[in-house]
Length: 245
Length: 281
Image (cartoon, rainbow over all chains, first blue to last red; front, side, top):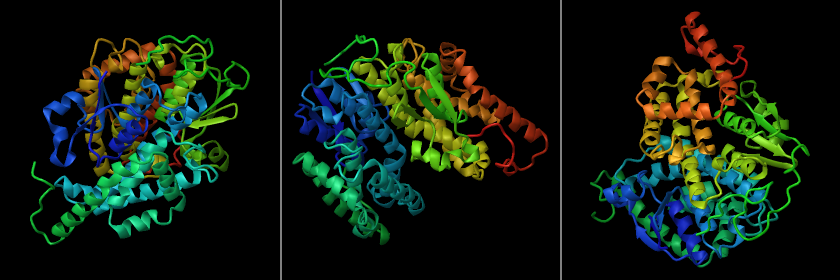
């Protein structure tokens, strides 16, 4: 049964799904849905995901969206996915559900709000909103602190005191990587002091080598493009939004 | 694709791959009582309590009154360092986040019917999908709207009409999406199901919070969504008498708020934590 992944590699949850499939040798076809070109609003894509967001999958005739649901489904439906990604042990599994749920309203909300309102909005033809960004930053900083003080344990590399990564590590490490799109001085201010987090992202990268690094290589050219858009906006010149649609 | 169908083990739902079910010391009834830390003014707390009662799960309800700041005590922080309700302790196992809790309880307690959290991988995936969508859509809109328009002062936060208006947009869009997408299909419940799942419980408890809001606002927001209103009713009927009993606190709070308003409270900021309400969100 064919598996199609509808992704934009600039979307953090898209990258988590892509890394997961590659690491686990799951065959798939990647269908690029470019948010900057508003391709998620096409009528064809609405058939795949009426919420018009990425990622989404189609497996045979089965459609699914929301990245955590997708990761769990793929871990369950494909044999050969090692247990540590989504353990059969009920208590370990429950803890993964717990951190993935926490993620929505904490790290994701904070990080996505901050990055959108300081950077990504420009790529989608919208203005920056520094007040919203400040609110997002507060939640982001509190979330990073909670990851360091609670979700990560000093003696084990991965979330929840695990020795090997789970889908939660993938989901949340991809979220943290999005901060690399920010201005270097902001990124250093927010992430620089977080040594335990930086180590955890590195451990996740190494555990999923070479895919995590390869998939995240899009971040750096995107950062440059965004810097250009920002300096153009600052000079109040007409903006071009990436490549023409 | 794996499809494990019905459970085969009397005490446990199927695990997903070939490794055998693992022993869990608290899976036997009566061995160590499950504790549920809840405030019935909290929507996810109500969902967990109703789920337990419906499924005959023995538990001790430990009331954590948010309006009295009991979630901020050092004792409760030991239970849940995020200082939120609901949380559970099962033997020595602690867990928070209501969706994670209901999934865990569906796994470990005997007698939980399959429709609450089906063993079928695809059905289960759809439940995860709507529960995830819920966080950033219905819940986000509803919580912000209710706090900003009504309950904020009970928790030491000012009313905020601008935030309420923005939240109402998200709430209304979410209700429209439930009506047009999540309730599509032959069944009376979410995802076209003939019977309720944990997703129905979670989302309906969320919408019930609107009961404390000014009636004309509630009617404006909910009124157009007749399919949603029917679904709420169907969920109440499928979970009686527990649904109404667990929600009785909301109606008490609603009456109290009405009395305060007609008693001449010109300014809703007079509704502060010093006002004696049985329990507040």
